[in-house]
Image 1 (tube, rainbow, N blue to C red):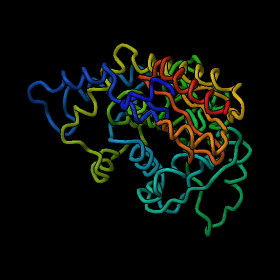
Image 2 (cartoon, helix red, strand yellow):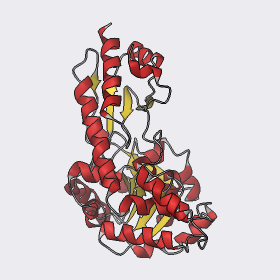
Image 3 (cartoon, rainbow, N blue to C red):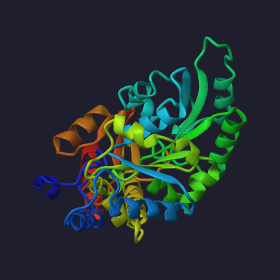
Image 4 (spheres, helix red, strand yellow):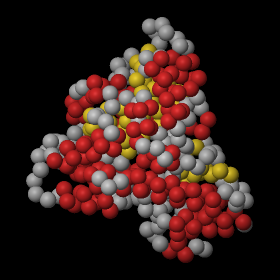
Length: 351
């Protein structure tokens, strides 16, 4: 039995949401907790965080801080749609599988249309087919293409792949929204600049993930097409996303962005996933299901192996992919954590 089992506070591989707050984000929150600040987002921390986002993407953009990814996705999509419109996304996209109908709710009924594609990435040919499947008034008019970067399976769209998709979207008169819950992982995986995966690739609005990158909670909704941000502040207020003490949502972003911590953690989590893949891919009865490009490893495991690992105290998700365990590394995952999990899996699969 692994010695790591005696540690009830062991770091797990179920979700990067399991991890706590990284030091940079925590220090910024502590610093923000000094004295009084203006409320509802008119504080100095929120202004500084928004300006840092603009610096990161090297462009003028409108920035709004909200509590979580579901609100970021749902409210940004609502800003692009009318209720009679439809949203095109991958069939495994988070807005379809994991947001309890929130996009449809906040758009007042915009229909989500699902597109196929290998490894979690949309097949470009599917966009034109969905848009022109029907053009009569009885069908919800396609309005938005929603992309996920990195995808639900941990894969990434290259800048060329993104531009191929957004070019089709523009030809079909679609806006482009990006769910970037793990955007940091995609940037470092591809070795490109943030702007290359965002506005330079034709993205109108990005939901820039913070909580999965080391922030306690909070995402940034970034409008590169600033005209589309008109009255988004009202939408945030109505949707319960205008924090009265907004500095505690925005200050952690200052800590993450000012010296590149967000990219360092993205690089680290990706490296831990690669270490995990290398340690388990040749074990008996283990099959890696998707290319490991970011901080996610999907492994096909027999049911008895899954049960045995759970009995040893390891937690990981089985519901994200129909036939695979999702193993997710976090900003605080260590090489020792990876090796302990792999050692237990080796023991179990050898039985």
